[in-house]
Image (cartoon, rainbow, N blue to C red; front, top):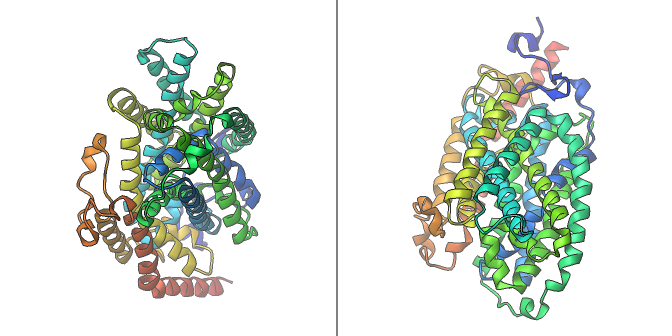
Length: 501
């Protein structure tokens, strides 16, 4: 009996399809299917982050009380840095042929990885729900502008919520291969429409007003950068290896990091910068973006372009949401739930629909719950990312793929040092972020350590530095605590391979 058979006698081959629907769950991808090249990673990352929704971050970053030039600097740095983190995590997909949260078992243990798995699942659900909400709100606003509905948007919002949810779930259920084909089309469609949008609204930019915005403090700049990081790359980091698991083993690690970073950050860097120009030129637009991000941006357009803008905006939002649903379904399977991958996506789609209904019909604003969600889950996600980056940096060999599914294998059931480290990073991180949104009062418990650096009204309060601190604690802590553990695992792996040969 081979090593693989002794550890995983019942592990099914991957990938599997029925018709064109991918049935592969969290299984190891077969070598015959690992044909993707690093440049193939550009499409899913670019298509998922080219939405005009990215322009809304311009208003939100300026909300930290910083100037246009300060906001531009932190937006560019935050976007590139956060997607570079995704690129590093994506290396694990190539090394392990498994989804991100299965790869996470190397650091946390096969059973212990369920803890960050829950965080990952909640994050994906939250993100895809936010994108669905944005699509629904944009539809209602544009339909009113066209005169097709009155000021009461209830009926169109109900219809839009149903249609959006169905499209997202159908795309996610279809799986990897169809999603990759879809992204190729959406990349061109969204890119062209976004360029047209920029050309049409350039006259709305008021450079005098924009450049007269007073400069803010350094802590405020950190706060803006943290928001961009949590809203961009850190919002995707928990699924970063889901696409790279199809990469050829010969693919260069530096190329994987580059194409992840380039594909993910290119759109946001351009969109947020342009969004800064628009929001900084109009206080009214900036305020409206907090209520309806994409719909507010559409108010600058001539009537003839509203329908193309709406269709493209919704498709780009759906693209990101489909990627999220696909990966959240995979994460659900890592928690031990024994269901087919398409069913997992269907469950997550139901939750997405309920979340969309709540925010659209019962929450007074969009931005409050959204930003509060980003910061709250951004802390544990940053801690997890730091730990996984350290694990990847420490390892010199590919993962023992089959041991990732065996609690008695070399990675063990639990790595308590990693779990305790993540808990400590969260406790410290949550203590250094603050919830400043009245419509998200359920998060007022955070910020209990801010008294050390001036309190909740101090200059650092809005910086939400807890996210960055959690990332640093996770990386340095794991690197120091688990270096010998990783070295021992790789030594035993090398010894086994030599004996096998």
